[in-house]
Image (spheres, rainbow, N blue to C red):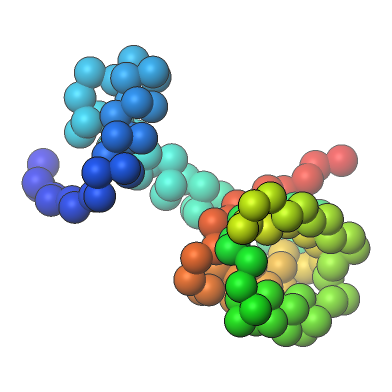
Length: 129
């Protein structure tokens, strides 16, 4: 197996170690491998979707004028997909849930535009009825 090196700041490493230990991992390598596998599977699952879908997009990002403006422009561009948006402001962060309905390729375009923005943490989930 190839060896890769990784640099983390102290806070991120501490958080990683706490979760690694809590989940019962005995090695950092095994925890990182499992995380990489989960990351790949989540994106592959998203890439393989087709057709008309209902999807929820979850976002967390800092409340900054430039970022809010950029998000507003993207949401306006895809407003035909957006059925509802809910948001909460907690401290200096905005937590947002966007419910979308439409062709999955258009939803993917919308989501991909969002995740290209620095400082946004996101996830997307298919809603099955």
